Image (tube, rainbow over all chains, first blue to last red):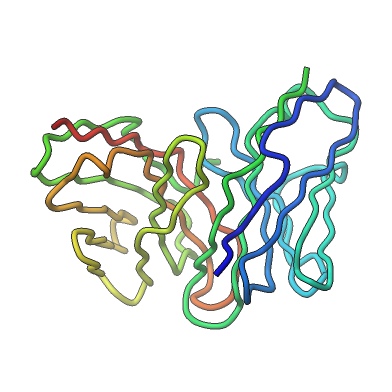
Amino acid sequence: ETGVTQSPTHLIKTRGQQVTLRCSSQSGHNTVSWYQQALGQGPQFIFQYYREEENGRGNFPPRFSGLQFPNYSSELNVNALELDDSALYLCASSSPTGEGNIQYFGAGTRLSVL
Amino acid sequence: DQQVKQNSPSLSVQEGRISILNCDYTNSMFDYFLWYKKYPAEGPTFLISISSIKDKNEDGRFTVFLNKSAKHLSLHIVPSQPGDSAVYFCAASVGLFGNEKLTFGTGTRLTIIP
């Protein structure tokens, strides 16, 4: 069984640029959530996609956007990058069936904005 | 507004002894609580969870206790092993089913001393 994979692992961008991060969900999972983890903080929920539709959004501006594809993989796009966007971006996949919210995480993409 | 709080940034425990990690929350709507463990350069790994209808859940060396009236939960690890050294995150969500967002604490770094 393949787990959650994210690419790239590291990325360096300059302020004002745009970035796309990618995530492949675990086999059998149709829900993908994205989180931002700043240094010394816990992950913060950005948004979630279920069956290619946004299914909940955290307190992030519209320049953070996403997509989910028919194979349930997902992209996170960030426009007009700011220095504060430097963080570890985590993707988690899950299945909506069953008890609890067991989300399984990838290793993340570390984004540095200079 | 930190709805999930882990007030101890770090904890050191002798190998073989009990490790107790604590977590407090403020949102009474939370129904489900999870603990994740995170090693450097890896994503968070699910450890154990508990729903609000229970006050204890056990899985091998790991036990989670929930005190709803105090809005407090704790993770007990007995006996502690060197491989348990990691950052532990407490997380909470609204709803027992489905995949609503997870709200994380800031984490506790556990170090097991051989």
